[in-house]
Image (cartoon, rainbow, N blue to C red):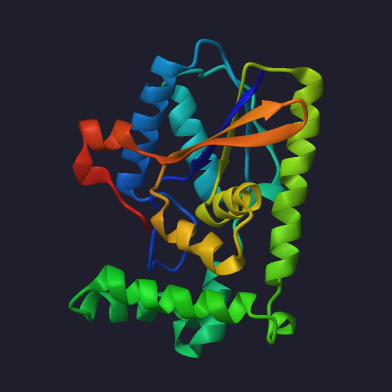
Length: 232
């Protein structure tokens, strides 16, 4: 029976010209994750990663701590939705990432304020009226992720590794959890806001059917370096 670990990437570079690279904190998170894998995985896993830079960096840093010889399959089906476009369609000035970071930093409760923006932007993206304004609509993203999950489960049912690890993003993991828990879009993205960087969401494969075992495990960071816990 295969256990699949879905990993959210380490902290990326929020507000930078290119979000898609790990911050120094993100690199440390990925290292802690790899050390944790070295403790809990008894043999090398099958590894797949999204094609984004933050996915690849998290993968390489983590594997260097536990299974440096492991091969990695790269699959863009595990990529995140274009969150910068989702923010910009909600508020055009956020097309410049530094302006979003600036607004958030100036607020008395930055995380709560960013949460309000995120909620509004996601509601517009998933609401149905504006699907045509996005390069990838909510239904298209949801179908892509659910298709990637089906394909992965079918592959693993044939090859039967003990473990599989998927390095991806919070939105992708939320869609998977939402699918397995039969959540609507609003509740699915409420999960997304809570998923910590380099946290683990685990799924057990029974035949070709995935069953959710855990969501958003990040105790391995909290126990060693609680100062490294991030959600953005």
